[in-house]
Image (cartoon, rainbow, N blue to C red; front, side):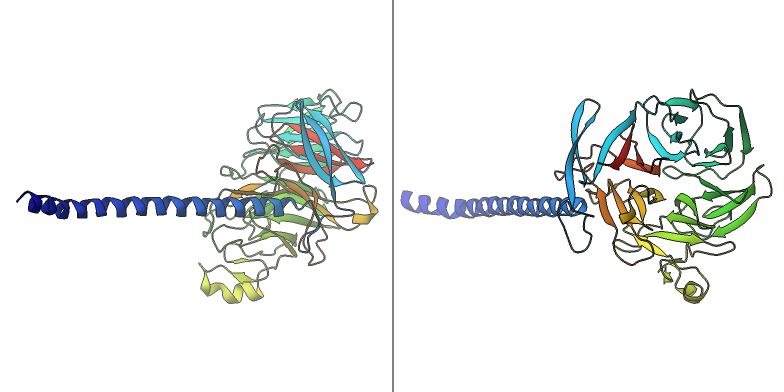
Length: 410
């Protein structure tokens, strides 16, 4: 009887142990799978970051000149490494700003900077550019900036203002509010500005990703005379213009399209703007491609909307750009410099660099300065705006560190 009882107990207990054993094995297997997937994700992330930096040559998007070489730069008493061609030197021109955005030079060589977090306009006087001086404060959502015929023009959340005869200490002769009723941008978007032929051109971002607008001024460029009067719709179909550059009697713009069409689509458009033209948004993107949300707009996209003249990869947050003068480098004649402010897609950071591209050719943009995003994924700086001073040096703002860089020939 005792022997039979022991056998019966073993039979009753064994399935329970078997269940526990299977459960433990499943849990261990899940942990192993999660660990291996995480390793793959980390490896993929590392590869993507290294590809973004491209310090060594690569066929799709290769560094310029003789490749990118490391240079040590001191940022707020901490040594950092940036990579750029050995023919050029980068240094800190000025620091102590809060979050510098766009930058422009006047005809005397003074540099002017919009600072969004400080709500301020700064001047880096040509006599002493290291000592930044505030021109004005309490400028809510200041962003857009241009210099024209002796005056600096800026955009805020709803205004266009001008400052004439600005001195090296930041004082000025006269300040005017020219326009006071611009559509207010949503978070992370701004009104942009450029002047040409005695007209003020304002890029107004849309207030949605893909919708039919109630206010036709949004997603467009509107123009005014120098007194802020005679409002006209200049061009439309532009979702989010990040900078406007008058060049060769035309306007060039960078335009960030809506998100969510497909992985990597739409690309960031570079458009040459003509008066009265429609650049497709929200129905089209790129070279006549149809947004899947609007399949009935095929004919419009193919025959009536304007195609982009060049494109840049999505997700980099292209902000400031400028044409490269021969005084900076004859090697880059007819090329443009673009600032990839940077962003994250599925936790993988990209951008955070300066690239150079000939927009008249289909070739990819070439890395010119990298390193603000390290190979380990650390983001220690964020370039935002760029311009060239009277000596042909490239000037770059860094909104994360509050500094301004100067890039010149060795």
